[in-house]
Length: 408
Length: 184
Image (cartoon, rainbow over all chains, first blue to last red; front, side, top):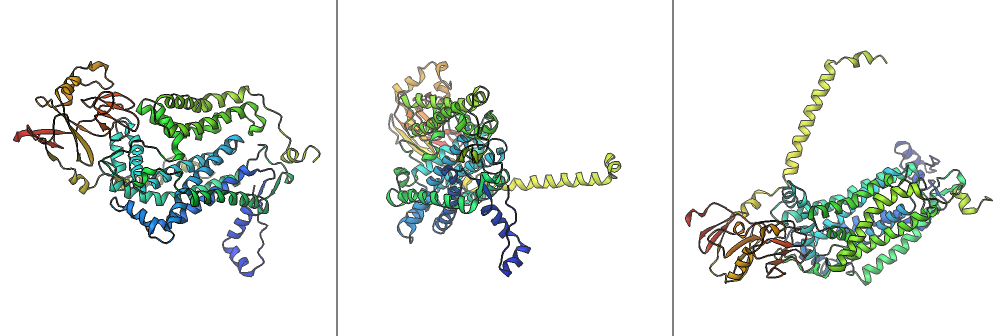
């Protein structure tokens, strides 16, 4: 799927350079003449938005690191110093903190789009798994960044999350001590989280390169799920996809800016403006919103080890999706039953997010058990069986036929 | 396909490849040791984790105080008669993590309960004198402990852990060592 080497620079120097490092040709074939299905809708623009958000996080993160101090007695105050004293520090920090939320929002839309249109199916399994790895890396990075603020929520989130590993029989406590570098979350923990929080975004960038590479090998899926068959089914990446990506990116930035400038603390927790205190646990510990569904799954199971296993399985199961979904038809457009179960899945995932923010008692526990049950049944029972029993709608012969009608 | 004959029989070169590869693998594994071990508690952290002596005299009947050892909160509970009886009069087999009260305290010092104040679920600090069993209640996920620090209800799998400690005298304990009670 590469629109190969039509790149002929006019400029003498560029010609000289291209003979020695053909990077211009690579960019040209990957982002200019690269053929994309002509029927891509706006749900396909979130990959570009995610790349943009990664860039925002790296740029704002590097400048924040110039003012932040990863030491337990100074970390919280250095963040307050960024907010009050550093030139535009308030803006940079709010961009970074809300940028994480926007990054996850775009990521979740991107994942759900892949699920709806069956983008994980053969031949895109490796592309999908790279995406799951990116999601895991995002979660680790986001968590460690939240800890750096060293407020009450930071400290106790670090304690609770690292303690998840104490559930491992036998070696659990040794692993937790190793993660902490002490007998509790403390200065060594903060220091290493800082180091890793700086490292992981670049690991993410590396895996993004692999993700895009894999994408360009197998080509993009599209709303019909039918592979492009002729030139009539595709258009050039530039200008068609770049303009479409650019438009939604601008819309997305309006939302981002609205959070940054009008409600910068809406997605945060007030308790994180209290400096970390190892002697007092806040009355209620809540993770950042983007982890809430998994937190609800953890809490819905009354056994510690099983709860932790359920938490990790609920993420790991995504990597097996290409083989759990047995249907040959990709797009939910032509799968009437799948479509209903899919939307139920979205509702249950969002519902788990809501329940994760509620205290673990009474009706909330029962509801999270039901939704956790559905979450796993969806992957382990419904998807494998649907492929066998579902009567799918007829697929169009080609992308251009689905767009232009049979006359085309 | 001229190399088939030499590939079938093992040559000196095969041996050298495998031997070199094995030494390189051992070397790579050895390199991982310092890279991984550096994350364990360092010498200063371990030194700061030395035993601490606590004077019990100022702790009133029924009071729970919180001290720190190895950055962990330690609860010292001066139990009243009723609280001791409540802890003793429980069917041990009905407990999630069965342990009689006598295993939770030092004999002859039944009024003193010394436990690590970290919920065995996910590490929050439980609140004292709360919950249905008048011991501790963990606000994070709702675990409840009784007056012997035993888990009674909620997701925590274990009783509150006991730190190593010993009585130096009737009103003094040393937390961090089990067997230094010789001065008593």
